[in-house]
Image (cartoon, rainbow, N blue to C red):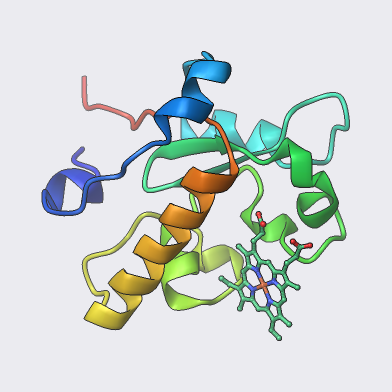
Length: 130
Ligand code: HEM
């Protein structure tokens, strides 16, 4: 199955190389596995994925933990939610095909913010047809 990232070549997720150097983790998680890192277990890091790139947002656990304002994004792919400015579970996906220019710009701004703020620790892997 193609991800939307493949479908939109001009939209390339960038990463912060400096933060990455300090955190040379390179996890590959399916969307199901990513759900394990949603901030409910205080012993595990908290991850957020944007367009397949996984960020470690553990340093702001207070925003992403269970019961906190941005918990819905934790352990999830949230490119669509960030683009649309909508914090609901059904918006947590990398479905980007119907975004307008403004929403794409919003998404890029969020991506810049996460790249500057958090280490990139890996990528989401999507199921392939065998
Ligand atoms: C009344 C509306 C909103 C207010 C007052 C608000 C307020 C804030 C504040 C104060 C922060 C900074 C928290 C901190 O660093 O301590 C923040 C961060 C954030 N907000 Fe909102 N927000 C609102 C709506 C939204 C919506 C609709 C979204 C959906 C995309 C959103 C997504 C985020 C995200 C992703 C962060 C960054 C968390 C991080 O630093 O990792 N916010 N918001």
